[in-house]
Image 1 (cartoon, rainbow, N blue to C red):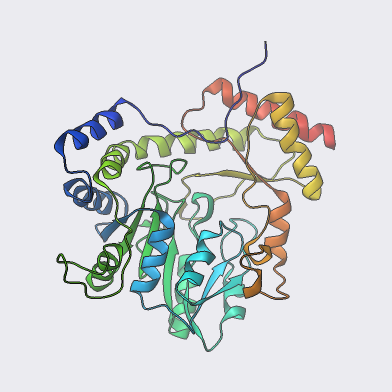
Image 2: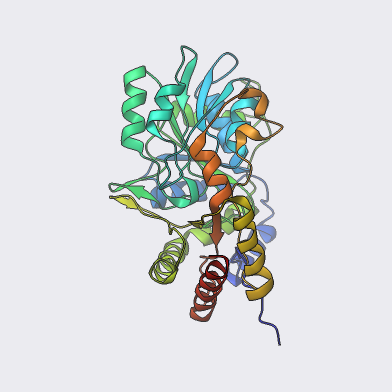
Length: 369
């Protein structure tokens, strides 16, 4: 009998979430209402040190509205990593500004300070690091560069709920931070995003932008969008917020087991003072894309172990975003794109699953050596 597939990710939606949704449906208050307001306050207190938070309908909306609220627009440049999901660069482009792609440092896959420096021009307005895979970016170094050049800092914390650096939570460093609440993230609202804001002015502008530009009905102050979160989604998020700490601990324990037992691969290091929340457990394998793809296929077909490759095509090579980066060479980004594999690390894994992942990886890597 074949073994069941271990999925790369597994959203956890239980009876508590279902009851919360049923209560909203019974209340008749389905659109943005009291559940959204409560979720914003609880998220702020739990994850970003009390910073004002504004809920929206997706992580991408959160980035887009945060950028607009901070004044980013045509003629501006925002420095972003190329090694991330396209939403980061997309959000900048959607404002009419130009995403400028910088390289990553090899250990944690986050923006490299020296590449940021090399990317600054007279049009640069901000730096937007991504806390990739749940590991915080080097915010002290990034902030120092920003201060030196009079730039703003924004945070794409889509994958980093609960991560921190030197005791300071991600999402509390920049002018704004954005957390995704997509189903495969460390916690979910079914779909949605949360924007943490450094000032009440930025928060108010995000609120206006998400709601057709109005705070009072029919008193539209600016051109806005319909990017609201529903009470249905907020109710799910409120329940998940009570569970995310335990899930994070489980992810960290799972990662520790993988660290201790995997062979022949580079396991993800953790920077001094950093709390990694392991949205992804991402290893490096030698041998280039062909060898990496062989390992992924063999894990799936021979050991029934799922995995993911995030991200095989850097943003500056995508058809959609390449026009912003003609001729750009980012060697560490290119290297990571052909070496990374993200193994299952989610809280649903059993000890037997973990042992099977280790056996599978060690066997497949050794077979190719």
